[in-house]
Image (tube, rainbow, N blue to C red):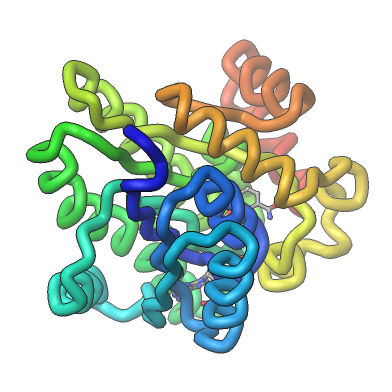
Length: 260
Ligand SMILES: NC(=O)c1ccc[n+]([C@@H]2O[C@H](COP(=O)([O-])OP(=O)(O)OC[C@H]3O[C@@H](n4cnc5c(N)ncnc54)[C@H](OP(=O)(O)O)[C@@H]3O)[C@@H](O)[C@H]2O)c1
């Protein structure tokens, strides 16, 4: 499909990997619908994308931690007569610490944003893609998806869900022109690090974080190549592969050490 006739909805477009993914799609000529809570950031990005790439960009402010938010998003899209060819489920956040000590509401919000909203949006926007037999879904997981993560237990579990869900869906649509692709970044230099209280964690001290631009480029290319899974950066690729060969107890022990 010519990207110029395509509309892409990107969640978490106000910063980091989502903002860079918006640049990737807009650069290729896709029209963008930008979703996050920070309305000012979204408007500034929409103006930049319109000016730099000559595409149309609109803003859809929403809090994905709100129950039933996908219904409201679909209603707003229908009211504005916007059909979504590509859904990028990128919004997400983490929190570091012992599960028993972390804020309970924030943990539940994390499941709502990282898992429930992603699933509900996909369920509401995938069927029209299948009817048109074009477009697809790009879900942002993490290398956290490949093993349990002590001291970030809920975050790792949400990303394991995203990976499993995406891989299964990818097979369900394999005989169509619709793509379901999963991007699993390792440590990346974005606001996520402060937000998750990870600044002094060994993972980010020694993990050689990638830039959000490099991660987004890899995810975009993986989606366009209809790859089920893209892991940006060779150290992350090797790490995700090697974890298959060590006992689960060792894998989670290492993750826990990196999160301490
Ligand atoms: N950075 C890393 O090391 C890393 C590694 C692996 C995977 N990831 C994943 O990459 C994705 C993007 O994260 P990032 O690193 O780019 O971090 P980021 O710069 O903090 O971006 C997170 C995005 O999610 C949005 N968001 C958060 N809560 C939201 C809510 N309740 N409703 C709507 N939007 C919400 C934020 O927008 P508002 O605050 O404006 O709402 C922001 O646009 C996440 O899924 C993250 O788990 C990150």
